[in-house]
Length: 324
Image (tube, rainbow, N blue to C red; front, side, top):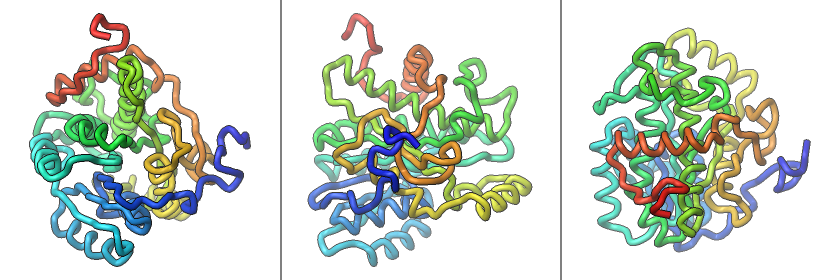
């Protein structure tokens, strides 16, 4: 395997590279279970302050109690309630958070709804996976972005190798799958949108001569509850078989998130994650991005559509516009 794909050594990136995070504050969407939980745990063990944003108060309170057992003496764990599929709750959670904090050292857009068997709409009328996985994170990131810039922080968006499988491109004519819904296509499009979001953010920041801070990662194939929630019966059976055959632990799946968030040698725009079996498993390094994900014109259009549909105000004009 090319050393370019494994810039952190043949065994891949490991948690020993995490620096002392004292005085740093990180936010994670969906940190009450699975990969997000493991990411929060690692940050807390290295002295960080962590806020997790989750939908279920009962499960989140339980997660906070469990995470408190792993934190170092100087670390702190707190939570906010938020449903990424409902933009009203996204705005409310962001408003509460911004009102109490002056800076943020990093945001991990971790929450992911996976392969819902039948088409479901969000309160705003979006297809559920596109609504939560992309539009929710797009708006949430915009609302916290001033705090992130004050902290010279990073925006880390978690995509998936499925961005290469489910959708060859963003279908702007049927963005919400009102005509031809399939679980894989809808999930794949949302994960493709995740990558295009970060790459377009970096392009727009660079054009404004501002620090570029959009980072990307994927967990490979990790055994988590996200694969079970919302999936149909036969899909769940198939996923359980794959879990036995291929899946690694959420602990390993979280490595790429912590890498992208904290490693001083991480580069904006690279796609960090497991590097074997087409990104499903193996040592953590750099993995390929699809040709569709680097379509600048489509990414710029997706950005503009996302601003219009969510009401997000990034104040970052398109690259090459008269405003630059």
